[in-house]
Length: 132
Length: 200
Image 1 (cartoon, rainbow over the protein chains, first blue to last red):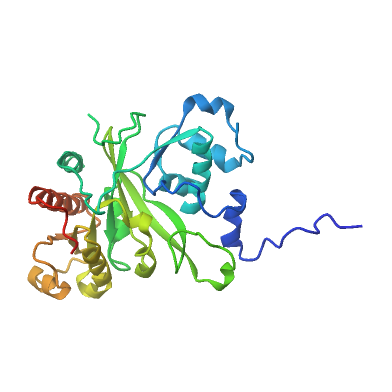
Image 2 (cartoon, rainbow over the protein chains, first blue to last red):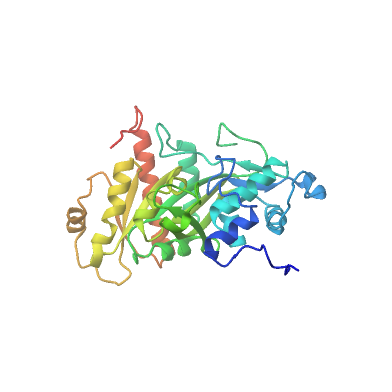
């Protein structure tokens, strides 16, 4: 008779690296490449009543993200709050966007070809900093 | 009023970021914590030496994969704009490849410690080569201004246009003034700009 643990993987090997990806069902890259550290993500409130709908394997982390993002948070803030690597967090957020439970607002892109913050933004940042 | 052409109108503010760079122990996390409205947050990422992010974990045991941690903070500018400050991880050779960290930054503050100017050389080289605007903040937290600004400029081989400001990363007003120096620098560059940003 087989022992029930037979066939279990030796999950201890390299656990710091492997374990977070069990949350994502083994996926190591997000299908979305538009999520950045400072993309602001928000839970769509009308969708929260049907949490889990359309998601094959809703993990506790998915629910935690939906709870956290009732107000807009940056991807980096979500990762920090869940104590998960950024790349794992992006996969989970990607799932929730895919199933219509979250929306994302991309940041303005600067410091790239042709990109430069507008005077309006710079003035707003300056005024905000002066109030500190 | 809406700052972006890509305004989604979903109520979320627009996020911008500034990098706080410099070598190990120059006071990056201190500065982030001093001006942030929340206690500095920490997040981690896996980086392989070959790529950004984790796009290939097969046979990972044979690869050099590193966890890098960075501290960041937030300043709510107004209801439509949030500024994030990211203190870059100590190990330059990893975060230099981390495009997500670097891309989209308005600019950077490179902190230097006059006792160990060399630890910040790599950051200066990096921003110069990527054409990312930056200012240098001389962190005088040890209370010793043992070198003149001219000496520091010379030692850093700094372009005359790059502002250099003295600061104390533990002091809120002084840290804010470094950020303001960067914003002023960006505004001056914007005003004088008639053509796309030069690449060097």
